[in-house]
Image (cartoon, rainbow, N blue to C red; front, side, top):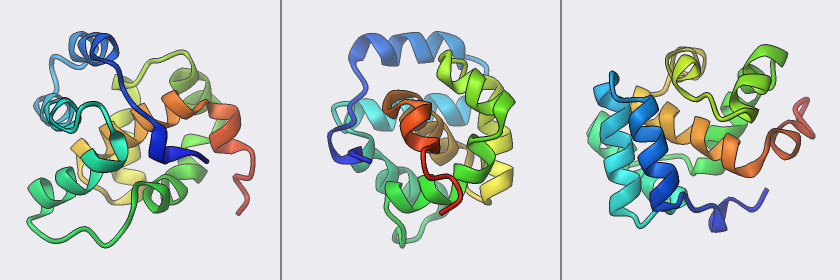
Length: 124
């Protein structure tokens, strides 16, 4: 997966902001993504530091793999594929044991990469 070049546009950030307006952690995640000029690979370590107060020990790719089993369940996959991030942030967070802001970035990353690509090798 080519996560390095995965970038969220200002228009997409604005769309996600409207969808996630009720979730302060998700809004903080969008602020961090915006701070990193839309680059999710840069935003995730920043979010991990802000939300856990510790140095990140995993890359966005590692976290996406950790979340893959949950993300690739049919209902979740279909929702993320259509761009519905909000209903899945909390479940991603709980399933992977990661902070809500990081789960927001992971959900957006899965959407941006495309669910076929994310779930192509979901058994690995």
